[in-house]
Image 1 (cartoon, rainbow, N blue to C red):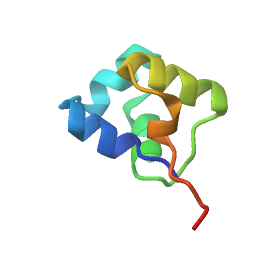
Image 2 (tube, helix red, strand yellow):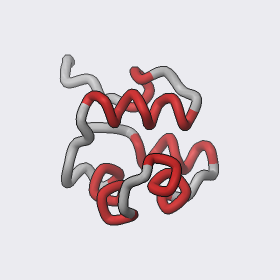
Image 3 (cartoon, helix red, strand yellow):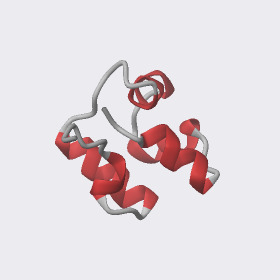
Image 4 (cartoon, rainbow, N blue to C red):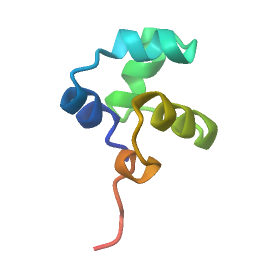
Length: 64
């Protein structure tokens, strides 16, 4: 699971803007945000760089 949607909302950034910055379709970024599809590690690093956050902020830990 990822926290892309939450981080976008915290920063006031729209998914369409992120899609344009990444060179991806809106549908692809939307599927990342809805956790119906997980981005590749390369894309996750790109998202973190574009949003200026540590990659750890985009990941939900599965450890309890």
